[in-house]
Amino acid sequence: MLRLNELKLPLEHPPEALEQAVIERLGLGPGELLSWRIVRRGHDARRRGAIRLVYSLDLALRDEDAALVRHAALTRAPEACYRPVALPPPPLLRPVVIGAGPCGLLAALVLAQLGLRPLILERGRIVRRRTVDTFAFWRRAELTPESNVQFGEGGAGTFSDGKLYSQVSDPHQYGRKVLQTFVQAGAPAEILVVAKPHIGTFRLVSMVESLRASIEALGGEYRFESQVTRFHLDTGANGRHRIEALELADGSTIAARQVVLAIGHSARDSFEALHAAGIAMHAKPLSIGVRIEHPQSLIDAARFGPQAGHKLLGAADYKLVHHASGGRGVYSFCMCPGGTVVAAASELGGVVTNGMSQYSRAERNANAGIVVGLQPGDFALHANGFDPGGPLAGIGFQRHWERRAFVVGGGDYRAPAQRVGDFLAGRASTTLGAVIPSYKPGVTPADLAACLPDFATVAIREALPHFDRRIPGFALADAVMTGVETRTSSPLRIPRGEDGQSLNTEGLFPAGEGAGYAGGILSAAIDGIRAAEAVARALA
Image (tube, rainbow, N blue to C red):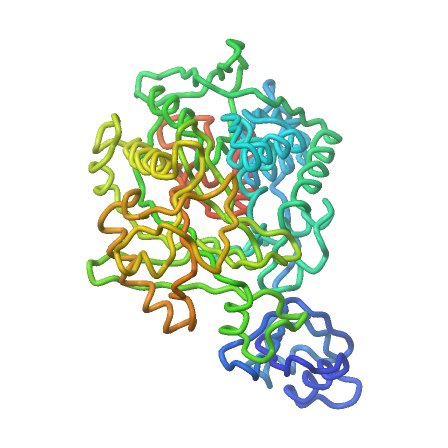
């Protein structure tokens, strides 16, 4: 088949107009177009009131070779089928996957499909119990450190917008494999077609359960509430390590020779254990900022104009970037249309924010992180007991500001919040306005400058008026900002070679967000597939 991209039609076009548009675009005669299917559907909203749908289609034509010569707009359709690596022989010790987030789940699934019967170790609880624990935190400020937004079956992506798009290069169709797997697990089939697919939290819960059932049916085994606390290595004469065993929090030991490390970006104690074992790692850039909330209707009107509310457009999103005069980048992060700001702490005495949406994206507010880029050199300001120049300094930096937010919020997991008008004027908020914050367990009007680095406060104050010129109303005085947003990515990277293994530890396969190789559900899941293939190649 042939691929035709960038076919644009009016938002209200009738169904039959799509085939006619293909015929007219390519100048096809009767009978030349044998069949077609939609590969991707997005929209071009650059002209408010004249929004167009944008299609990519795969076409079957009577003479495809001739059509390719005549039309530069046509290309060969890429193969949309994932092809696994060759089946390795079963090892004496089955591979272990640490972590049951998107990366760990896809790694475990592929390993199971290859007949390798993986063992999955998850520090948190099964997803239904985890959901109960998380809602107890949101409703009653009862934090369970091992079962929350960050830890438990499904990983941090379970309580998010469920976005399933990524900018990673994907010539091997790993992304297609992920999306098809999710559809088989209960995700709506439209995620295979829409340009910016998402699922939402409630659907993700049932999908995670379905994936577990598939993995177990193929011989995989789960062990929940099984945190790895120590990595036992054998060190050769050349100084290179080899993974030998994993020690759990209950004192038991599991022999292991191939370990996929899919621990997520918030497993700070695991990072410390890896560092103590001598496994190579280094600090990487981070971001810090706040969550900002506006009425979703304001964002819809600003982005879509009179066509706001159209069922094919849904709730509007945005992506904003500003290069501040001090050299810092300020950008929107994890924008959640029609969603809520959620409490995402995983440590006692800290406040962390994140965003979440359901599939319907029907809540009253839009929210997004507004964050400022950091470099490892910034961490020395507040390394919080870690070596300021070491790989764990970013953890200390994050923890410092999370604890400051806890104190400023009142010391009971309420988050500090501020009206945008007050923030821009440099004064603390004493009350909030028309935009009602969605964060639970609740907020305390405050001055967010007290729980952000000075350079971040300055950069965000500069960025907001610039963003207002892009989206009129963005600097609305009553828009509300809630702090702090610190978990945008892992604070470190665990480097790996072309064989997927740690640079200095044979048999350890760092993967996903925690290792610094992904950002979001889809890219983490793709990296999980890569890790599983690397294990298979090592065994072969």
